[in-house]
Image (cartoon, rainbow, N blue to C red; front, side):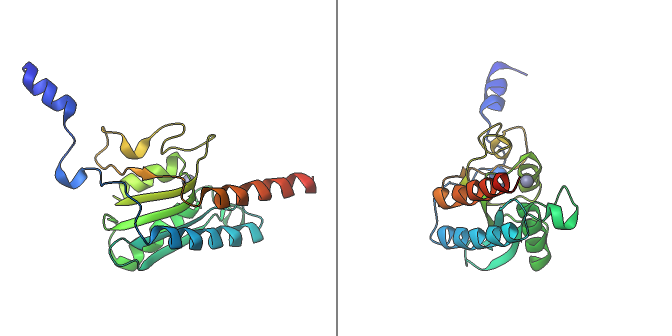
Length: 179
Ligand SMILES: [Zn+2]
């Protein structure tokens, strides 16, 4: 390959379908985050780490799937809020491709969920607080904007961040008190 082709490969941003969508906050994002926070509270009431997620149709704001962390009750290491919400949304629309959808989640996705976001071609990703220990959309790594993968989504973090992080802090504080 000649130098111009090499340089163009270096800077290639992928096919139009795979191109990152502009990461701007939309009017539905914050109300959806409030719903995700409610779902996270449901998780806490079951003694699950409080994380909640909603998938909605980006254009209409219609909720397609919801989930909260259910690892303990389901005895399932994969039962993360995002995975449950994504599966529910795909079942609702009858399509595994969620390119017209937005995933809203209270905590930055882990590597498993970030991988699923790429595989499901999720169109937009909005999260509440960062996860410095396991976050895979900016903290430890950035799977959803890796140019080597065939789908990219620019995450929007920090939406209702204080509420989302307070949920987790309160949960772990209460847990320590019980011990
Ligand atoms: Zn996860």
